[in-house]
Amino acid sequence: MARSSLYQQVAAEVRRAIYTGELAPGDQIPTETDLMEAHGVSRNTVRLALGELENEGLILRMRRRGTFVRERRPLLMRPQDEFPSRDQEVERRLDSFVHAVTAEGREPDQNIEVSIVEPPEDVATRLALADGALAVVRRRLRFVDGQPYNTNDSYFPLDLVADSEIARPGNITRGANRVLEELGHPQTRVVDDISARMPTSDETLRLRLEPGTPVIVHVRVGYDGEETPVRVAVSVLPADKHLIRYELERQSASRP
Image (cartoon, rainbow, N blue to C red; front, side, top):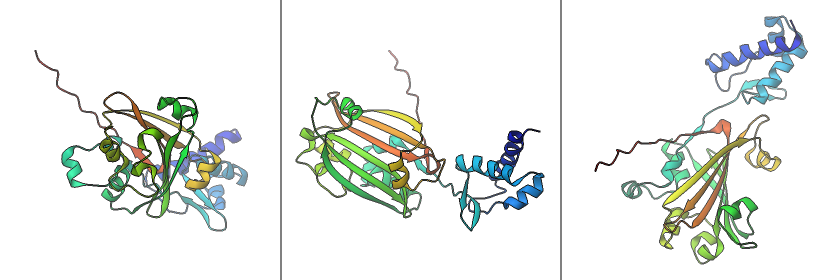
């Protein structure tokens, strides 16, 4: 049997044990020696198998401690909850991220940096800004239970929000969407683009990502009643820490 088939067979057996729960998150997997004896293969074959599982984000190899099944407790993200109904707004005055985390009994936190920038070309295009026009960006590094979970960079046209809370440092407890509404620009429509890729070196560092962890990029553009784009939010979500759930309800056909 070819070497590639051997290491894939070892990887498949460990992968099966993880997915079936035989090896739970945090459990230490068998040592290289144990895997060599169990499968009758060389150390190099075992290391190739473990390397594949590490690249898939299933295991974490810790020097001098061993190899463990990675913790995988994804945060449920419901993008539609960013715009609650009026009744729901009465029940909560927190932004959607804080609400999602506290709803699971977990502890949210975030670091916020606010600055005036010439936004990246793709953001400027989505905001329909003229060449050289500036935007306010609120950059957030978000934490769950003390661990970095995602980043969220929200861009707003400077001439729209210059004198508001959005342009000032600090948290906006009721959320920037409510501030936009108070400024006369409630978002009546949003467009979401969701893609996946490997992280940049900066994202790997900020989010403390393990090798082989892809990220989900969620870009949301918000439009007011005049179809003017008033916000572009770019979220980078480690794929092993998030579950994105959309719920769609079919509307009844109108009758003449």
